Length: 161
Image 1 (cartoon, rainbow, N blue to C red):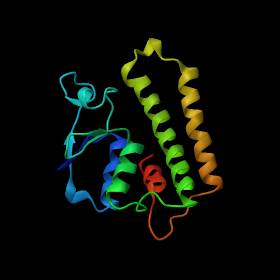
Image 2: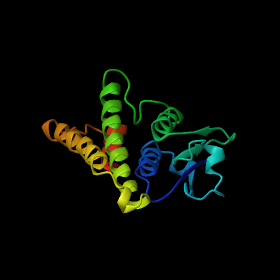
Image 3: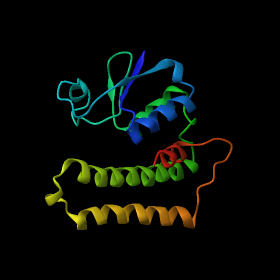
């Protein structure tokens, strides 16, 4: 069975779990807990970057990061399920990139507070990350994405952001 290694707090893990469900693959994918901060977790041998999520296929091939996993899931479901074909494809992938960027910037802010000693916090850097999120939200407010007959990967990523 295909395995997704993730952790409950991960917005990127959430994204691929939702993508698997939308692709109709939930019954063919099992989710296994992974801790990227545990040096004994096998995650680092599955993804040399030590990041989640990681998808492990039936033959042991590993697929990472969430964007590539979403592509894999869509292909496994026959294509065009969560990643549209044709002209709509790039709008969906661009929205996914915007939402992923918001998630990345937000996580960097969290990590600054969680993992760096307070005396080493760098407010200009934290502000820079927050400005990314604010600009992305401004773009979304100016032109909110519309969900047609079914959500695509951009909508999924935005929901997770």
